[in-house]
Image 1 (cartoon, rainbow over the protein chains, first blue to last red):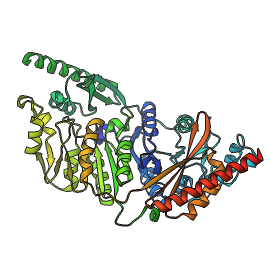
Image 2: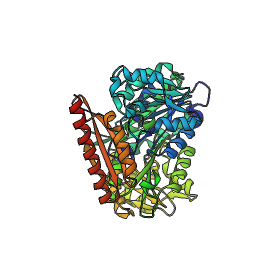
Image 3: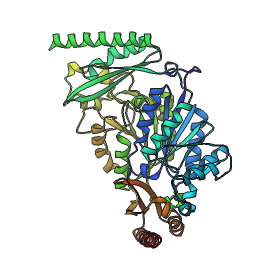
Image 4: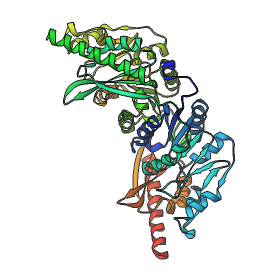
Length: 255
Length: 255
């Protein structure tokens, strides 16, 4: 399947690293993974892997190193607030082997919304930025995210993360977009598995996925066809639709 | 922080492996991670890591091997349906180095709801079970999940996954439950970061997390205190509450 997805230089890949005990405990339900994944797909970047790790330095550094070496971009969420459990920035500095300190640019940003007398040590933690990083400003919070190398460090609060992603997106290299078409089968997945597999085999530059769902209480299936090539996508879609018509006709006859 | 979380034998850990292109593309938003995480926390199992990988054999096998060697249990979701893109069972067999074939028990289960004439090759894929695995029956679908070693292979459709988890849970070894208390600070995170960090340091057997949220449009913070020891939990909670009262009183004076 790797060939289908493309190993060419025009493919841009990404991983998401979610940092936070509160997600792993189930107390907070993550809303960032789906948002970032959909956003990246829409701009032509393939999210290839997601990891969620706890607020433990070693875990964060290890995951970050594995992901940043493997994918074009990494997006992290969480752990950049003002409290003792916010250790993401320090972990990123450690992973990149650079120093970290209060960044005058980040401090100035905080001061646009926080009075100098309220800029205590805790809040100043939010201005700790690894050496050599660029800030990610955003319209929702005065605390910035940052980019270092291919890693983008963003907030965990969805509204802030989303504002940061809007700032980051125009700076990203994007690839040939993976186009997709969805066809509602009006058939059960088990009725089309055989012929769908044959179509998948006959269309090697196209990815075909089959997703069952309950359609007003009755089993139905969405067939999703994806390719970077619009003509190959159209050909595979036509083959799927012809197959679906044939299977439906066959079932009507035997009914 | 590893010590706080416990390395003792009474700690039971787990990882979740979500398998599916449709989650990574953002087309489908995962609903299983938060559900499993909360469920495990409630029965005394700590979810320590989550990974989401695409429908690629090598990726699934690599992630599964990394996770099953490291945690007490692994729970996978997705990729056990009747179509060509459902490759989880084959990947699990490969990871464990065992053969895989149509399992007579699983075939019999399918036949409880599928007529023999409809049990085509595609549907029979759902009865392919690695050698030596136990089936995970469930009340929603006639297609079983399975358990092999410490790995539990479940469906991606949330209602089916949840029914499978209900079957699996009573078979799991559970640890000393991580108890938790949540305190609403009625303060901004930056106002409590300093003293909260001091409390965290003074209570080494307790994990303290700070989670900002918008409270009817105003910034507020939940402090979550977790420990396996109820007395240590109570002591840390009392310290947090006393600190919050003090900070609030201080802010009223300066207001």
